[in-house]
Image 1 (cartoon, chains in turn purple, cyan):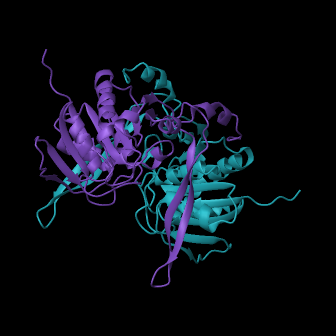
Image 2 (spheres, one colour):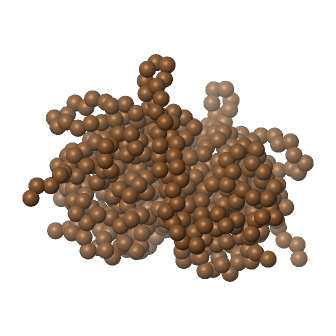
Image 3 (cartoon, rainbow over the protein chains, first blue to last red):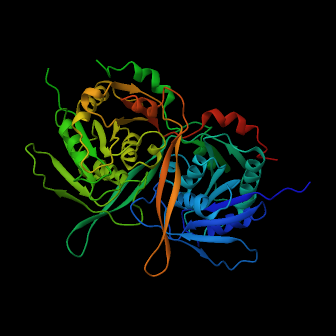
Length: 260
Length: 260
């Protein structure tokens, strides 16, 4: 039985020329029809930013690759890319949106700051099954080869099973040779945070300025967290929701003295 | 019994000169010692962005007000402001962080895009009780007077009761005279979204560009949502968490064919 190939929207937050998105495109072309709409420049740390006070450019670009697919370079954020792709570029709702492969971790609390995941969440809000992929290697020359098998397997599962409304996947891949990756583990987001350190300097005009840096602190001792799985050599898969309501606290809050 | 006054960090995403933060400062000065660290320019729609590829300036500014307190103007995002405040400016961990009052709604899915709420979430990650306040009026000349009583009451409750680890509050206030506001309601985040529309134009050089606009769509018929409460004339209080794990989907996901 012949079926139409799935339409797959590919984006990222490191920019359209990053090696990570090239690796992701290569895998997705084995699974469906690919359209790329990605930022024209790196957008790391952009969280779920959208461009509301500025204009957006979005131009088709030529890609020197063996296989033909369309690519668009957008002046906005990852979330902007998904919005403009679904509203202005694609002729039908895509069957899947994948974002990445990010150069660097988006595990645990990093999901909050992640442009990669904001694209996946934006797609999820629009009812499109979505996955963000991140490799635990910040280097521009990171080796994405070992990730491909796992990216493909997880994507095939999402294409086959779909995802429930309001849920997208956050996938992080350890920086290991393929033979040392132990498999794929379903996890919860670890309770971790960054301890900020600001590097204070003075500019030539005598004005103080800062560079943000920090130290990652994992306060989670559970063996079901993404940080634990990654440390053990597994690929972590965390289902992520964008209903942020802390349902467990609603009844306590109702006992507060909020009204006379 | 005399007690030390609570130390309250005030920030926002509309910028340090916005009328909304002035109203918030006024209320907070009745409740504790205030320090303001806020963006030097509007940051709406910034989501949980942080500045990692650029320098940050953060300068003390003079405020022409009757009561004395310190204010700092920061070149970064709302999340940056909280980070730099706690690490570089404050001599002890604040007892509370409040963000706003935003000029415009951060109810339902808007929480995802909200700079106001990203500041509150950032404080929450650092273990500081935090509240984001937003008035359903985008106007620069919005009237914050009717909000003050409710802002004060909610803040007093948080100072008295604290908040559990991992939870901050998202408060939205209806655009109504004080006499028409029915009270405060504890709610869950409504299931709503934006239907994007892009306004496509051509610049004088002949290049196409877009303005993002959109239509808010509330698909939620529940009477326990923030949108419902606001439409009925209540102030909505949604407890917000930053563990994004979709715990309800973990067991299903474990049944997927992820490993051979």
